[in-house]
Length: 271
Image 1 (cartoon, rainbow, N blue to C red):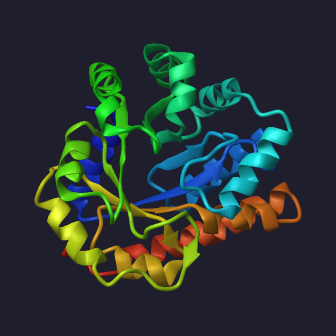
Image 2 (tube, one colour):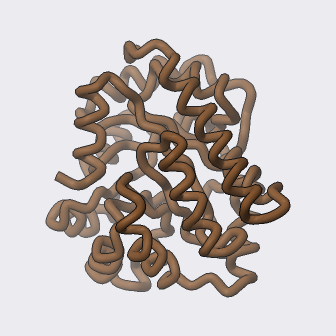
């Protein structure tokens, strides 16, 4: 079992839901990224998604796209996320997963990327642009290494394809709550509950919902539906809006704590 598998098994046993904030590596700098990951854990995050900046991001909205560009403009290199995770091993016990383009993994080499990431301390990777038709080799490598391969299902993904994606995924399934790009939203689709309920009947994998979660109110509405919630743009925006690194840590701490409270106080039954 990967660290992600172990986490969700423990959460299910306790009747709790996972909270996964997203941070862009290197925005505003790698030292601050490391600090806010530690702050998120202390505030109640269960695992953390580390975005690997890429010049042609898939499905990311303007807030995350801009954060990627800022990091790239400052000279971000892939090795930096490996070095950061290695330094955090003694401080951060929650699983870290990278959000990384398949183009980057392919360039590094499938086995080599998984090897480097696992040795650095990552428990898995979310690969948003990996086609299910091309997923078999990476899925096998990740399974052999107990390294979670998380793939995305969208509201417009045909149901037969959703099942195929689930079969080649591990750790959890990333359910995209809305069509389009990432970003904060005040309203979510009326058919979201029914879609997630159907998907839950097709797979034993935990289902985490991302895209569109703007704050505690949205988190509280979705908590009964999902095994976990992923919050990206709302977190990245707070980091960027902070006047300095200390303020960024404070903003993340306060926001993650508010999300944690909202999730914990929501009904526990899964629809």
